[in-house]
Image 1 (tube, rainbow, N blue to C red):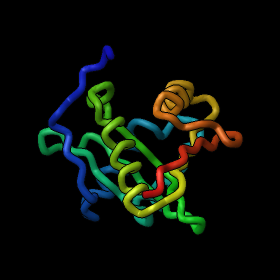
Image 2 (image 1 turned 60 degrees about the vertical axis):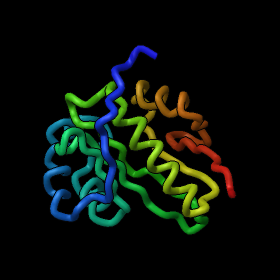
Image 3 (image 1 turned 45 degrees about the vertical axis):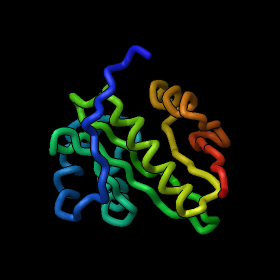
Image 4 (image 1 turned 135 degrees about the vertical axis):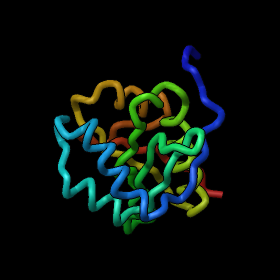
Length: 144
């Protein structure tokens, strides 16, 4: 596979007290990226279901999920902190989001990926997501 997979990544519901720290970390890395918007990121971090990945007790990344009226979930943000890339954390967060959506009997998991974010688009395609319109990717989920 060619990547150094970390087995010590634990995922938990994100404590509210961690939200400002996660926002600061994300902003320090992504503020200059196309599509970054402080208000939108803060809204997702405070409103959505937020799951935190920890590696050796320290934040390694997070995933924010929004529940849609049709029962599907949308990944608003999936962020892996610098120094934790290519160690399995992004895959673990994506798998956790998918497992959560399946447990909630969601028909699909969706994610918005910027058009110019070629590495992320490739990552989601490899994970079984297909483009459905513009920047929206979707993966149909099994329904027990």
